Length: 129
Image (cartoon, rainbow, N blue to C red; front, side, top):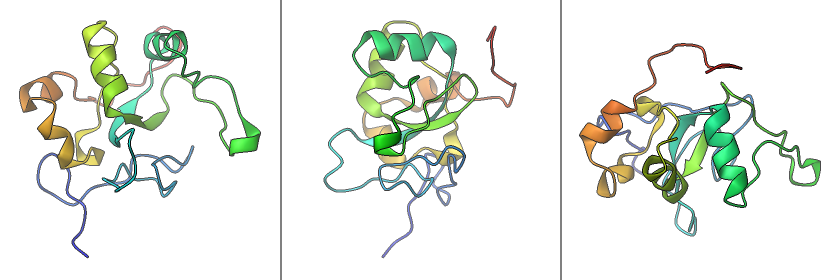
């Protein structure tokens, strides 16, 4: 089985294991057959994105122990559904992207220049973004 590649063409790096993310809950934003949400983009959560997502009907803030979901806060890394990130981009609240941990399949739908514009620079994100 070939290894997953990131948007740079290198080996896909883990997005997060605390909290554990990914469609397969293995920490990676892999391209997975059957993942209709395409959890392929590793993003660093911001308050504005989390509020936007909740307003769209996907509350990522509230813990859901029945689904082993701890709830997210600003600064957490999470494999986002590609469509939700694009919606947030259009609403001017897209969170930063960890390109080394974002699957190359994202490039079919998002221009590389846009991804570079939103590249996470390592600056801590928290309560005042």
